[in-house]
Length: 308
Length: 271
Image 1 (cartoon, chains in turn red, brown):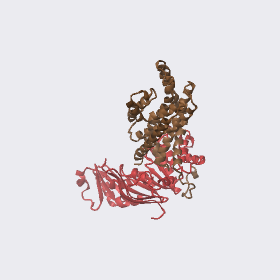
Image 2 (cartoon, each protein chain N blue to C red; image 1 turned 90 degrees about the vertical axis):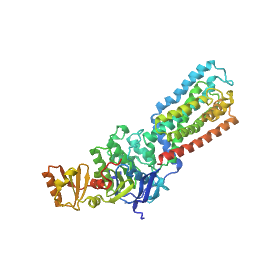
Image 3 (cartoon, each protein chain N blue to C red; image 1 turned 135 degrees about the horizontal axis):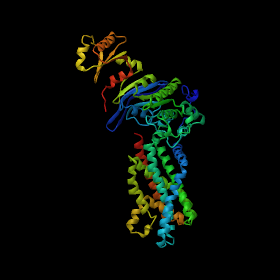
Image 4 (cartoon, chains in turn brown, red; image 1 turned 45 degrees about the vertical axis):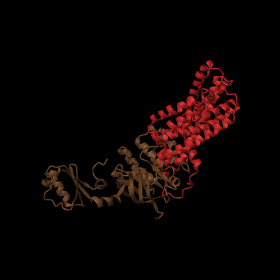
């Protein structure tokens, strides 16, 4: 275990009574990377984040955060972490500026007025510093939450679903801000269930479900490993498949049924893709040919059914 | 965008050594005090308002038909109790509605606990704040009863530290309830079953030693009883050995309720 790693986890577990939220996971987060945790609701992402934040105690396994044991040295670890939780918990008794000042006062080094100005500017809230929290839009609140997570100049920033519930404009602005951090070498850990977000931001990620890690890698790597390059989706009933697709050489082609859809995963520039599209056109079936995306990996690994 | 908003590869952070227990508690206390100061005008009305009404209605209204008690008017008898009943209500509101709002509604505790501040520091900071706010309440009622000429002894100034200590006790008791509460409605039970009986049966409105023995014994189990007895001794200027016993009892209840509320809250906050 070298000191280079921002976080290392081995056999990390968390259970609440009989329920095992995190069922023994291993991962290693290097300094300077943006590491993602993807998974459906209830996959164990937030439980994992709370352990990384040195807020909740692991039920088993080992965890090191910035070289510290987050249970024994939680206070010291939290002094060096920045946390942006899933739920907005800005202090509604205080205005925008006071939120940063007050939060800074909870840290040993405090926060200077100059630093607060910089953070307000970073969050594009410079002209809203006297606003009350309930007057802010969802996107502004999120930006303030992210700015607040930076008051102590953290070595590791933990973001739990940073853009959930935001409109597209607000999401793009948040992504821009997070990429700025990434460019400056700030280590980030984020959870999300937006695949485009993970593809844009994460250098590496793990896909989780039912408290376990299903696979790990760079977004591109995962896509190639699990779904190849191209995807053809046909809206075709199972009963008609033989009639429409008969005669095509589909042996060895990875495919899945999803409700009224048949989804084919194909290698780069496969002739089969054109053939499938042609068959669909002739049979007047709705068909889509597109590049494989992280979402395909996600659905393939975690299943297409709702699991709630 | 400012280039310096975030540092480059972070290194060489000065002074990251977290402070001790009381530093953390102090930061929580000062957060609450800062917020209180912004709304101080509205909370001040609550501080004098109600005790003043009780003093007028019971002390000077009912008092006209009540004979003198131990050589003092009825208003003078109940005045010291009103100082500390204000403490009880101030602390209890802060420890129930105030704390629950920060715990569950605003998630202020979650935000604070993501920083170096520990659960123990957070609870201590809240309890200390409850004590400070309560002593402000005690001070405002003390001023009112002084204006009515109901404060014969300079020892009455010690009701301020009394308000602080007993305020911490009532805050800790209330936060124990907050720790197990699922909604604001739950506090109705506490107010109806615990706080109101304490207000009525802790010897504020009638002398316990004139009651049947079992009433006197029962009252010893009400934390407010001890505080009322101390307050009366201070305002009247008549401390005795019994005052020492009541002080010890109050301190024991403070320690016990702090221990209970911190165990329950730790369980709730560090999931």
